[in-house]
Image 1 (cartoon, rainbow, N blue to C red):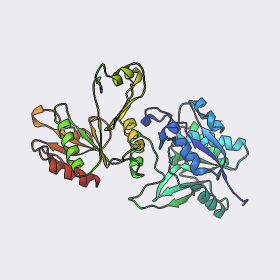
Image 2: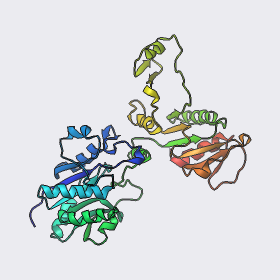
Image 3: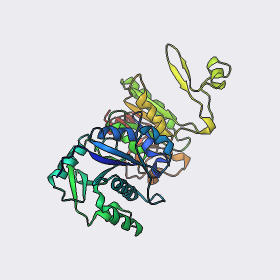
Image 4: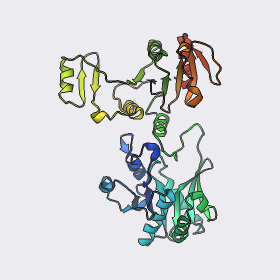
Length: 375
């Protein structure tokens, strides 16, 4: 078998990214860089040539100076369609195989391609695909595909076979195996949603734990939030807080210089003094930032890392949270419809399959949060 120093690679970034709100996933920023740039960094020195499987926003990818490979089958048919397009491209440039990688795995090991090359040499061409397993879990989008599979894959797509596992079930596939401690970070984690990005940032140590306080209006969220923050700060913890406001609000008094400057159009406007500073940024066209965009600001905060972020409100967002329940409001319990609620703080005993805390016992609630998030 010929000497192999690198592999042709196509990064698959042609999906709709519905769980990301339709954003172009490859361009979503993590650690202040697009996801695509993280993947490119991990394969640098081992990948050549490189193509990008893209189906929209083509102008935004021009700066990367790589060939753009559009899906041959229209209609966003999934990763198997992108893989077929990669095989077609590789055939056209006379390559015997092509490695496909998803754009949403920014933490893939740097030794991935060398290990695939090592296995390819060891198998002496006796394979159709080389893919990856981590702790025995398969990652079928990551694969070194023989270009001779192109016609078979095209026929499968025409017969509406879109699942990779279904297509590869009768094909000679070998695996590079990775193992990691189950308490550690899976380097092949796909970032499919904002919560995946948040979780990865926490695992990597770029964000502290996040504890939401969710409940109906009038349940006492703000009162409890203040009590928790006071309790924790007295014990020496640094607590950040994000509070959702449902209406327009002003952070300064009309007539003050900072207010007038902001109203004149400054965006952002920062006011600073010896004791504190504040940043105010107007949302143009009422384009409110979502919770995960706000949380991302904490990963960039330059002064002091928080030990915990408390989020008040945002009861519909998929973050871990405590439900605040006040019996006299006669409102339905939220935990029955929200698996992210891990405890209830109530002023009356209720039947629940999750821990029940006394809403009036701040010590009990504080100790529970400390044990939950190990802060």
